[in-house]
Image 1: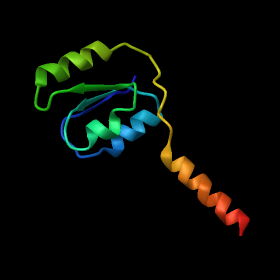
Image 2: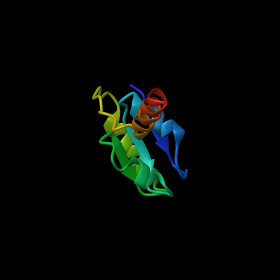
Image 3: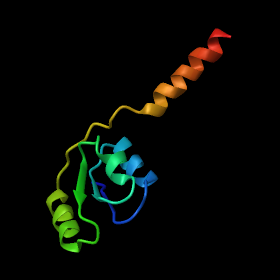
Length: 89
């Protein structure tokens, strides 16, 4: 099982990689993370700087093998639109 804990970041590439693999992510509610991770069922938010909340979230996730469905990939839609446009030319 993989999981990530993101204590401070505005937006995280690591979190999006974890999402693409359906892994749970422990995230502090800071910067743009709250908005960018809110649509992912595998996100577990903790208050910023609250070490005990981080510890509890990680311990609750240990041993779980649940797969979380990644939200719609907006980039996939954008890429497909570009492909359609290029093919129509």
